[in-house]
Length: 63
Length: 504
Image (tube, rainbow over all chains, first blue to last red; front, side, top):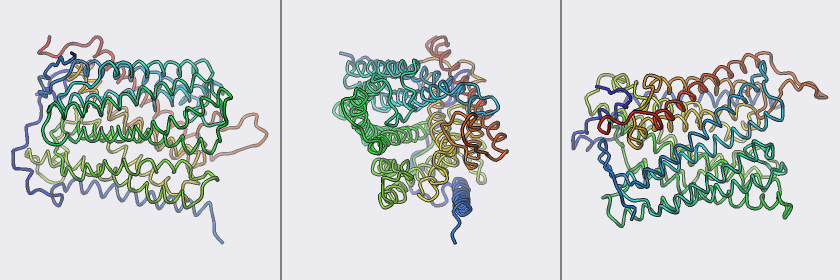
C-alpha cells in the first residue's frame, strides 16, 4: 500500500528476485514485450531516416 | 575524523555525513540554476513564438545565453556532482575521500557560476552558450567558466579517490555496482570534456584580455570537444539513473552485466569523436575527417545508447515477469507503478530520449542530411528531446527518491508530484516536435525575428510556420508548468517538508 509523499519504491520496496531465477536466462524469449517496442523504434528510425533523404533529394536535384 | 555515518532504513546503505551534505548542497544549487534557466526559457520561448515576440533583440540574446549556461552547464553539472557523490560514497558505503577539497570544489563552482551570471545579467556576455570567437565577452565570463571547471575537475578527482578509498577499506565486495560503473564512465568523459574546456577557455580568456589570438575555426573544433562531450556526461549519468530508478521502483534486473558495462565503455571510446557532427558544414575540415568521425565513430557511441535502450526496458520486463506478471506481451508494463513519479519519469525519459532525440540526432550525424538541418530549429528540437526530455526528466525522477532517502523528507504536494513527469514530458514532446517541424520549413535557430522586420531583404516562410511556432509555444508553456511544479515540490519538500515517518 502506498504512503502519502513517499514513492512506492521507498514505502513498499520491490520483493527480491528469488535466488537462482536469473540463471539460465538469456535474451531470447525473455523480454518479448521489449522486443516489440524495440521493433517499433527501429521502424520509426527507418522511416525518419528515409524521409530525410527524400527531403534532401527535393532540395538537391541531380541532373 | 569525518567518518560519521547513518544507516538508511530503506536501503540499508551507510551514508557518510559529508556525502549527505555535499549531495544536498549540490542538489539545492542545481535547483536554483534550474529556476533561473527555466524563467529565461519562458522569456526566450515567448519571443520565438512569433505572434507574441516578447523581448527586444538585446534581451533575447541575453536571455538565450542565460538559459543555455544555466540549463546545460550549471543545473546539469551541479546535479551530476551530486550523482557522483551518491554513486561513489553512498552506494559503496564509503566515506568521501577528501571532504575539505570537496567543499573547496563546491565553493569554486558556485563562485565561478556567480561570476558568469553577473557578466550575463549585466550584458557583458551576450555571446550565447557557445561563445564563438570572435564574439567577445567580458574576461570575467571566461574566468568564471574556468573556475567552475576547476571545481568540477576536483569533484571528479574526489569521485575516483572515493572509489580507491572504498576498495582499500573493503566497504563493498566484488565488482562495483553497475550504477557506480556508469557514473565512473561519466567521470572519465568529464575528464576528457574538462581537458578540452581548459584547452580552449584559457586561450580565449587571454584573447579577451588582448594577450593572444584565437582562430575561430580552431575555437569551434576544440570547443565542441567540450560542448558536445559535456552533454555525453549527461547521457552516461542519465543511463546510470535509468538503471538505478529501475532497481528502486520495480526491482528491475540487469540482463547482462558485461553487455551493459561494454556499452558504457563504448561511450568513453567514441563519444568525443561524435563532437565532429557539429562541424559537418564547416568548410575548414575535409570530408574524410567528417565522415570518419560521424558516420563511423559516432555510430559506435549510438550503438551504446541503443544497447541501453534495450537493456533498461528489458530489465524492467524481466524483473516484472520474475515477480509473476507474465500474461501476454505487456502485463508487466500495465501492472507497473505508473503513479510513482520515479517510474513514470524513467519510462518517459527512455521514450523521449530514444524515440525523439535519438532518431533525430543520429540522422543529423549524416553529412549530407546535416546540410538541410544545420542552424535550423531542428537542432534545438533534437537536443531538447535528449537533454530536457531525457536527462532532465531522469534527474527529476531520481529527485523523488533523493528527497526521502537523502533529505529524509516526504515529498510535498504528492498528487502534483505524481502528475509532474507526465505534464513535463507531454510539454517537451509537443515542444520538441513542433521545433523539428518548424526547422524542416527552414526556420533558423538562435534568431530573434524571423520576419526580418527592417531588413534590406525579404525572407518568406511557409504560412504554416506561424501555426507550428504557436504549437511550440503551447508545448513549451506546458513543460514550463511541469518544471515549475518540480521546483515547487522539491524546494517545499526540502525546506518546509514533513520528515519521514520514522523520524517524525
